[in-house]
Length: 283
Image (cartoon, rainbow, N blue to C red; front, side, top):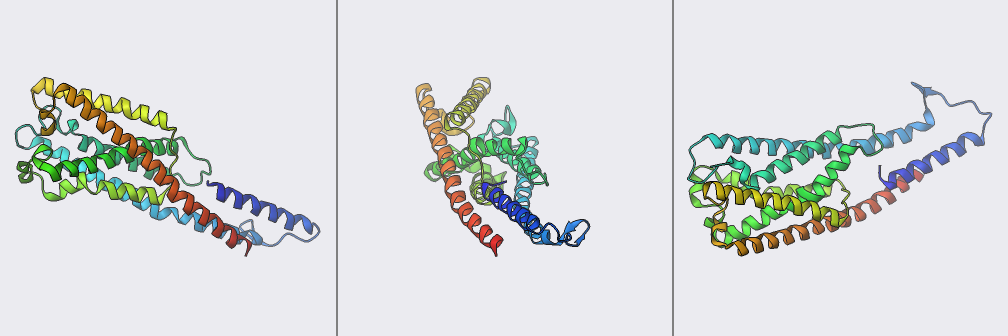
């Protein structure tokens, strides 16, 4: 529950107690199903506040279903005859794009489950983990995948998404993997506030995961002699390390961008909502 709603609830209880104890000899107002008549306006307002979560739940559920469909579609391609080097050794699991889709699907699945936990005023451990997953990984990694892919694609698509792939993957799959991710993430920023962890902890987690992925793609190269992305074959070992460090610095900046964006959107929204709720309450 937000601080604003806690304040309004606290003020509501104070005023109700003052009204009730001011006239102790008056009989209790009649009620329906044990609920006092004087409480109905507050119950209706609480119900209205709860109903605002319905669009958010629909958004989360729709995003989860979309990502689950895309992941299943791409995974099914693993058994088909594709261009040389595609899905060899590790299948789609060696591509950051596919791993990002799994990440987004996991986050929106957790978000949907958290939304369906009705009647809990305190944040559950699931909600906290969901926030951390979005803040540390889903937003910065998802945004990074979109930005880096289209920058390289605009320069020379053969470095990241060769034209031969078009015969096996329709255009909508390219946009599902590399375009739609960003507007969905921005939509998530708008529909729900998120708690971001301390920056040093978040960057440490990103660094560990980044090193793990770098080790994975190097292992794939050493095993079958094929780089995950054609661009990587043009780098020397030192150049590859420099490219990795550059990418990690970009992801770190995107994490901080997400933190600032979340703070800006919800500091403005909560201030307005708190003022509106208080005005409605005192009417």
